[in-house]
Image (tube, rainbow, N blue to C red; front, side, top):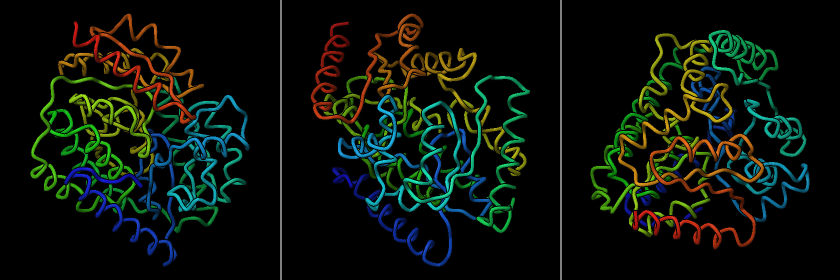
Length: 371
């Protein structure tokens, strides 16, 4: 666990520890945790099925990456390796009873095919279509309905409660709106945002909106010299190299990456739906996706560029995980389409990674200062 370095982070740690204890009690009383990796999976569906949903993006270390690399082929995303390497560590991944096995690429397919054996847990499969069509949306909605039937038939859930799903979704949306407003205003430091996003992805949303209001009010603001947008792959909780470097330089972050604003009600993303059945929630999640894997992915570029312009960001960092071709192959188009300087960073959790990243970030910030 990271050491909190600000009043916001200290408050987040207290709430996080309380939620982890509540999660342990929830499991001890017979409750089950459902893990997921991609924001295209609506956690309200898991809540409707009676699960405690958690988006597992926590660990990041050389040791866990190496351990995961021993059970899967080497050319796999470090995020996948870390997840598979976390067996027996007592991490959040080890608290998951059932996985929403949403396959978004060949690497996640490989992960979910061996995860039951490695982490001794259950995986219920799902497929996210890459095409952005009405037919694909309908197919994803239907597959979410099938997913729920599969979970119930397997005895992992007693059934889907739409009222429970609605309560979860509305509370999450309310907390997400407050967090998104604070993030886009530049009122929070990069690491304060990081802690709050982790809470948003892993804890229960009840009361989270009020908690966010309280800690934002006492945060004291974040004086900064300029803003840098960050797009690309998700950033695990314990991987703070990029965000710490930007904060040390007095830079504000616009988090456009997969575990950032894309998961929050921002610029029309993740809007509340009128119905809270699994199909409707899946359709809304499908429409909210702004990912490099989408075909066509023009919407992703438009989302990034319009966000950069609106925030008056001085630069854009595209953070891609090693072996993640979905993001890395778009580096040329990012540079062509962006109105600001672009740094593409291909990262892992290997030894020496921190020094390499810090050097590249510092050099990039120097070019922005000269521009």
